[in-house]
Length: 89
Image (cartoon, rainbow, N blue to C red; front, side):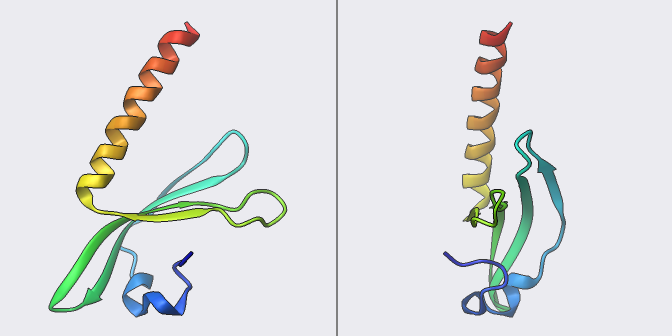
């Protein structure tokens, strides 16, 4: 799995435009960032989702989503959060 530090991603992958994160109740840090990779004349814009390490240093997960994929994931998360909140009431 490639990470931001991975040489295979190239210099562009290390060019983050913004930073947003949250820490879950179990202590995992989830970061959401804008990622720009590719050639300067044909950049690829992605939203990077990085789920941090589990305690003990076990690597987390990383994904690069297109803007539409990120919107779809957002809709799914909101839908599940709403359903879960309703059930908990």
